[in-house]
Image 1 (cartoon, helix red, strand yellow):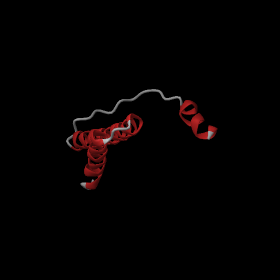
Image 2: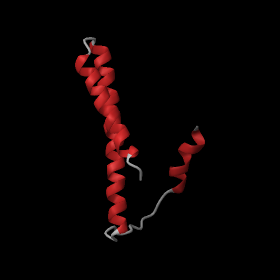
Image 3: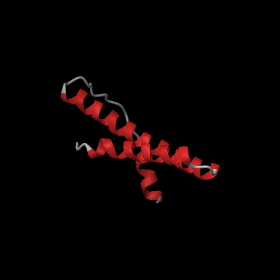
Length: 80
């Protein structure tokens, strides 16, 4: 994984927070804060994936076997 995958969402969040702090228009401010939240959620996913990968590489994850309804998973794909 390259460092830009970690830095990019964080830099977006910081940029939008900076814009929101200076913005007088409440609608614009809300838009910036929503974009910031979105970037932070992406960052959280990246970090979670990194942690999971590290656990898997150390053999700390245990596979879980369960029944899966393939039709339920694939139906949304056919709806688009």
